Image 1 (cartoon, helix red, strand yellow):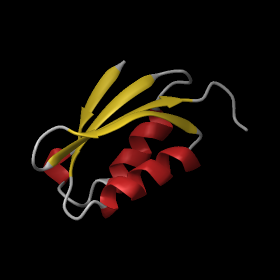
Image 2 (cartoon, one colour):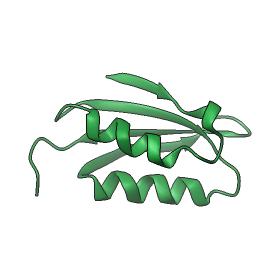
Image 3 (cartoon, helix red, strand yellow):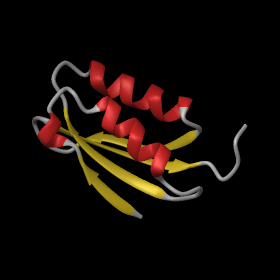
Length: 78
């Protein structure tokens, strides 16, 4: 399990999120931290994870501006 902090990217975190997911190992659990604005970034991040063959294990707001998304990359491509 590893943690990736994308909060410094503000609303421009999606491409880095995708790169980090693609670079992760099968069955690896990754916790991504990112800053939310209007919540549309949360939906986009979850959709991106699903599209990259990941299980979303948890998605939660942990303070006024930050979000945590926990994913697990699938072992096999579907």
